[in-house]
Length: 116
Image (cartoon, rainbow, N blue to C red; front, side, top):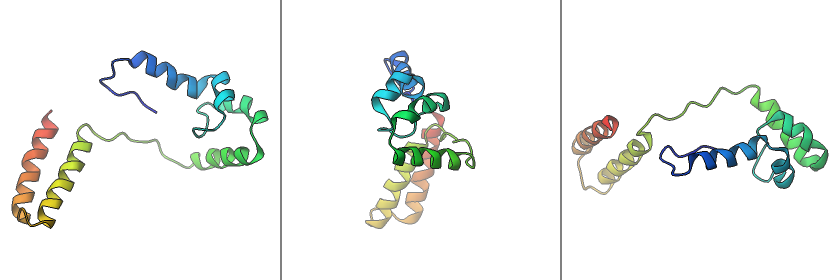
């Protein structure tokens, strides 16, 4: 979960995320409906109320997470760059541009996006 950088209600959104991750009452209300509980402390409190299959799923997620690396956020502009790449690829595929034109246009636009 995350908060949009330009959110008009960042504090309120952060409170909702915090409740999903850290609040025992919210965890009891939602169980594992939206995936694993963010806090191991809250998960321990919840374990007695979840069904055995969900317990197995949580145990598996805990075991797997011990072998994962932290998530690295995508750099600013990466979504726009990916979209641009698809657009230029389509232009080539539908013979609207040559490969050379699409490559030149891609790098011109990508530089503009990355300067924002």
